[in-house]
Length: 320
Image (cartoon, rainbow, N blue to C red):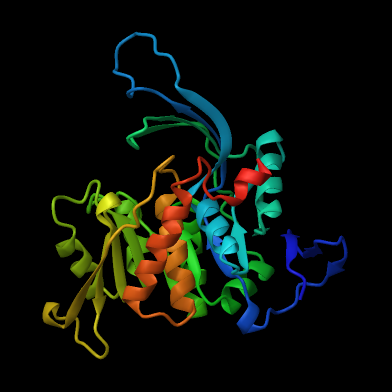
């Protein structure tokens, strides 16, 4: 089977031919990911700016693809998984750069046209600190999923819904398929209302511990009691932990398991996209039949490969 280079109301083959929108066989169906893809300028500073007028000299700057969903799609494609990315992309210079780089990296797109492609200016430090300035943020047109996208979700081995208005509007359609839903709530503080529909819909929830408090485990257990099968929290250089529901349990805390995995030591060049790569590695291993601990270890190994490139994935080193 030839993997489509792009999908917008029909299949366009990499060789330029055309198919009608046919049903994917389940074994080779792409993972569907919905969420942000952006064109970013990265600026490295000695320290993040203080809120007073002053001048700083940049240590480095470059342009690259951003967006948590683009990162996951690149990671899964790099692991050999067919993936279909549903994102808001404009017919502008930034959008053409995003589209070209993703397609060259093996990611199929089901993009929805918007006035401007999402774009950020990210101020970074070598310690991983970041301030993201949104230069443009496309508005979700609010249209329902196309028949082709709805069919792709129904056929997908998993659906990833990343935080965005567009993905939030797809939750009902995703749940109706009965396919497992994965989500990434990033640095959730435990109270923001926007995240709740994602948490309530997801079978697998990923997060980091930046804002949840000193111990993320009570919140993770709460999510499992609420219906999630597995909740994973990344801890940077300390690795990651997962709280999962034991088979046949009744959601009591005594019937939950805690799994821990260490980070893979690596000389870090850039931390952008490490969490997305971790989730992609776990998803790929899980779909391959790996046990939870083995899947987490696969995620840690995959995240380490991203820490050695200044892009979201090493595939972009040759593309950009």
